[in-house]
Every structure is written in structure tokens, then in C-alpha cells.
Amino acid sequence: MTEWLPITLLVFCVCWDWISTIVDGFWCWTVFQKEFFVKILLIHNAYKIFGGEDSVLAEEEKLITNGGYRVAKWEVSNHEVSSIWDKVKAFLFTPFSFYYFFKCLKVLKNEMPDVVHVHNYFPLLSPSIFYACKVFGVPVVHTLHNYRAVCPSALLMHAGKINENSINHGVWWSIRKKVYRKSYVGTFALAMMVALHKSIRTWNLKVDRFIALTEFSRKKFIEAGWPESKICIKPNFISDPITRDSASYPKGGYALFVGRLSAEKGVNTLLNAWLEIKFPLKIIGAGPLVTDVEQRAGDCVEYLGEKNKEEVISLMRGADFIIMPSIWYEGFPMVLVEALACGTPALVSRLGSMEEIVCNGIVGLHFEPGNSVDLANKVQWLLDNPEAAHAMGENARNEYLEKYTPERNIDILMSIYGQAIEAAAVRGKS
Image (spheres, helix red, strand yellow):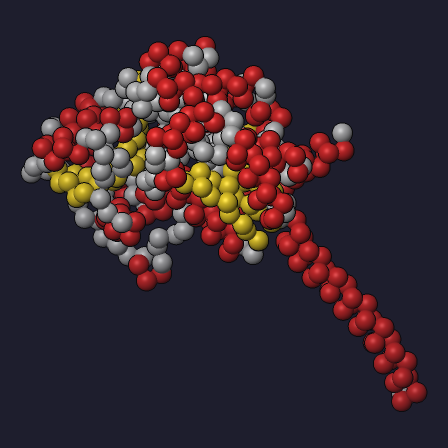
């Protein structure tokens, strides 16, 4: 027995050496993949007033960082546009900024990213940054938060109505209508940007993957001539607001509206509907129609002003249902994701992405856009059918867990980055 001991030890040492080599190699390969495969450079032109796109960028930055990937960010702000000269420069270089083209080259040289993810480039950065990325051969992903690259209005809306003229007939009509801030000059600059980059095929040649937030949005960009094969779908997401300690949360016997108090958000439709409803409605937000809301507040309508995110989530969890009566093509309203996460049914206009996100009769109800009578009828139905409303709330929570968690989102995002890198590699060989 003892004569076999040296041989046994030798075999064990050799086998252990092989096993440890394989394990170490796999570990090094995994680390190499994460460290080398993806260093992401996030690029964003921030708005003066912190909005939805800024919020999405912040959440995605945390998502990627928490996933163990290296992240760099290059951000400029519209606060830089203050003087008359700043506004003149912004106007002149909205179609293509040579200053930010060279600035982007410098950033790319310093950061050496494996992929660039652009959120917003208007008005300072301009689409020039996509050309800078191609100088370095860096794969580019661009999130299509709105329709700015298709229409100067960014909303595909004018005079309070859906308007797809820019998709069907080009953008030059928009100048006469002053669709951008009622300005001939501003609208002209944007129309020039849209027309220029469509004609020189920027979106076909200089971006490897686009992120549309919904299938509806994807189809609109395809209608506008964007490359179908390059447009992926990745919804927005939020971290789960419900913890084990806060799982039980009673409903408070009220409906809730959260959003900008403006015409395109359907505020007038909401207020008119509530003339027929005897059920508490709480309104959160600010905007040009705040005076109208304050004047219409009464026995059943309570205006709460602006609230922070934690307060909104608390009120949303306590609401019997939320209402989104928008009359324009919403991108991907974070309010709807929050409602789903909170297990709160949603009443939404039968329009665009809202119709897609909220499955009618399953996690909420649809009503005809701009029709206050139909909205009032749907509200009354929910009040008359509390068991069905409760079931919709449970379905909404399950919908969130299936589609809109950070864990699900990081998988989709990394897949899109991988596609962009692969596409860039294939292009480099051709």
C-alpha cells in the first residue's frame, strides 16, 4: 500500500495542477471579458431642467456600474447656453458642431472606450459626435428618447394634435408653423439638422445600434427611413420600490395623476372627466396649466404640487389606480413603470406606447384619447368592479417583475452593446 503513495501523490499533484490551471484560466478569461469587452462611455447633453432622459441616464449609469463594468461619462449642459452669443452659436452649429467634433475626439482618445452610448446630443453636441466616434472606429449605440431626429417638434405633434408630416412629407413645413418654441430661427436650425443627416445618411452609416423604447416607437423610426436591422427595443426600468419590509401597503381610496401640467399631457381631458366623478383625485406636477388645475381643485380634486420621487412612489402605492390621459406619442413614461412596480392599475389613452405598455383589461384600461366622457366611464367601471381592479394591480406587479427590473434590463443592454461591437468589427473587416 505504501509503495503506491508516491505515485498517488504525483497523480494528484498533476491533476490538481491541471484543474487549477483551467479554473484560473476561466477566471482570468471572465475578468478579461468584463474588463476588456466593455468599457462604456456615456455621452449626454443635459437639459436645464432635470427631466426623464436625464433620469434614465442616471439610472443606466448606476445599472452598468453595479454590473461590474467600467463606465466613463462625458456630459455637457444646456446651462452653458446663457448669453446671446451662446444662443447664436447653438443655432449655427445645431446641424454639425465642429467644436464638439474635435472635443469628442479628445475625449475618445483619453477614455479609449469599447463602446459609446449616446443619449441626447441636442443642441450643443450635435450629430457631429457620431462622426468623431467613427474616426476612432468605436461602436456606437444611441437611445431614441424622442422624435427630435425626425421632426423639429420632437413630439410628432403640432397645435395640440398628432402630426406626422415630417415622416410623410419632410421637415420644411415645420418652419412656417414655428413648431420649436414658436421660433422661426430655432425651427429652421432643427429642420436643417434633420434634413442634413437624413440626406448624408448619418443614421444608416454612423450608428451601429439604436435603442427604441417600444415597438411602436421602432415602427415610427422605420417609417421615417431609419435602418430596420439596427433598431433594438429596450424599455426603461426602475429599481424595485417594494422591499420585504414594505410589502403590505393598503390602498387609500383615490386616483392619481403624475406628470407635467400641460396640454399634450391631457390635463384638460382629466379635469373635464372629473366633473362627472365623485371619487378623490390627487394631482402631482407643475407646468403651464398649473393655474387651471388650482382653480378647478375642489371637493374631489386635490392639487399636491411637486413631490420628490419617494413621495410619488408612496402616493402611487396607495392609489387605487393612476391616470395618464396624454394626447401625444409618449416615449416610455416612467410613471407607468412605477405604477406597474407598485402594483397599481393604469388608465391610459389608447395611443402609441401607452397602449402597448398597458395591456387593456389585464394591467389597466384604455380610453379614447381626448375623450373625457370615455375616461369618466372607464373610471366608473373600475370603481364599480373593485375585484377586477385588484386583479389588475396584481397583474401589473407581475408585469414589472417579468419585464422592467434592473436585472432584466442589464441583460438586454449588454446584448445590444455586443451587437454593436460585432457590427463594428464586421464593418472594419469589409
